[in-house]
Image (tube, rainbow, N blue to C red; front, side, top):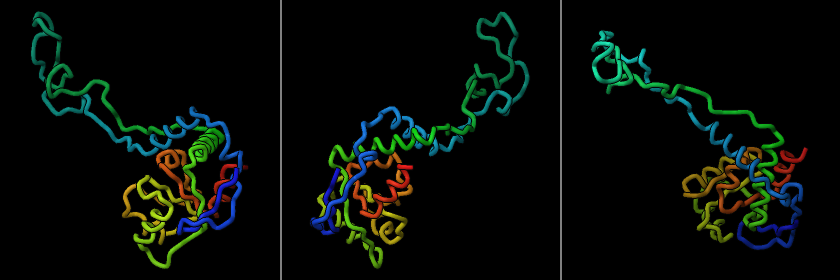
Length: 209
């Protein structure tokens, strides 16, 4: 698969770049995508939810009523889960929500997500670029030139570029990330990907071993 390389003015450079079919033209595996996105979201959970059980609630341990003959459920002290203000039965406890997912499955998920973007023509390749100083206006101009200003856009760069990141961070629905940090969720969450030419080799190096 070949796509045209554009400059940041939205003009064709006359060059084309070949996208690796093993990454951008595979049959997408929806289940692998589901598992990888589930893992990413699970890793973001704090897992700090906690409720007090019966033994942790502050209150008297005096038995409130007789064991039998009261006409209702038996209960001991005021901390009983039966009563309002009592402890909670089987409440949440701090836990780790992460789970293991094989590396090859995660790679397949990223390839599948990128293949979807290629099929939808939502992948734009541009020449490598940077700025001398952070300028939000510069990113806005690129978005307008590429005609994607109304879409949720993900810029993928060959490496971390603080100047480009600072230029884009105040723009709603625009994100900038290095190719090494690219994940399935970010690819699917974006309406369109603007990939710097140099980032293609980095992506290929990460996904093709």
